[in-house]
Image (cartoon, rainbow, N blue to C red; front, side):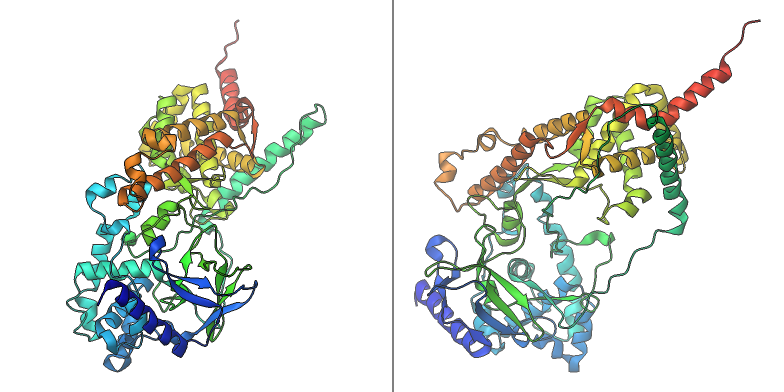
Length: 562
């Protein structure tokens, strides 16, 4: 039987299975062979579809997860307890691998037959092919080593607990395929009827005084400044919130081993079931062309049109706000004209290298010490919306010219620290030395950094930075842009890559072009949405207490001639 016939037969069996198991399937949609467009199967409109129309409905018992898999019924139901005690990814990997091992005995057999048997994600690339992705930081998220750790954790030990012989001998290659399918096709499906329970977090009492002291100090200074205003006029600036509209999706992935840094929720503890959703995953995805969305109801999942879809058009879902690099990592393809949510990244190491070179007295060692203090700031923990603080391995620079606020705040803090140190380098170096000896606990350096954090956070809350912060931003981003190959910076791919548009080298090049284009956009806009104040004003503000102490010290040591 030819490959084409196999493909058509599998599609026919799948459609028959869908019609028998789904609550409803609109006669206006059809599964189509889109291999000529390198899209495998997809869904097209046979007639015009209006916004809000139901395309299909899927009963919850047809979804494949730990609740519905036949694996959960083994050992008189004891296997389900094992699965519920595992993290979401591990549980679904075991369930899907088991259903695949059943072959035609699985109730999902026609559906499983149309799932891919190979993958083009970087997990399956050779080391040489992965080199083509450099200097993208995406290469650090491929996670081959982490995947192998997960495999060794599950097989054969957990498989034996489940009481199934068919999973004990699952190979690492088979494991990678199953994990790749889940990464590409799974959905996080809310538990029906479960309500979110959110409580307000309280500030740790032992750190209350530290934050209170900073705020009282600020109130005292504001009071003094208010008195001063009665005698001298000064410029008044209004405060308003600044928030970036795009947040990079950071869903857990099967390749993220976590290394024990954060507790991983088990299936029982989570509000969602990671699930395989037949037909919903047949829709191809595009960040710019999305015209349908999956809605969660108590008894079923419903796919609805989010806009009018004309006859002959493809029905597109979206996999989230992913850039091309993440689309390639998760799904093994790229969007040719770039994702709507493309971004480039600047690493923390890039930032620290820049400051150590521009301000040599602020060494890499000293910068790392400062970053450690910033990462433990209780003021930021209390006042930022994000629970993760502002210290990250990398910072996103989006194609629309916006950057994540954490990047801006960190640059401002480091700029003000550096300029303050430049005013009195001996004092600055002494503070760092003393802080290292004391382990930073209640050191003068820590107190000064906390003061700078407070002032800088207040400034960014007013949509302001300093002029040299903007300068440093442009220099950091420019240095990052120059890490990309010249043909990437030019935006025109070589003929040999354009001639093989679906080769891995071409996919890698398109990802790099998307990243560089995003960095370039941010470099051109250069934080133009923010107002820039003179640095001397900010530095004078944060050094106010030091200058007062220096002045008093000078008076104490001044001798009066007889």
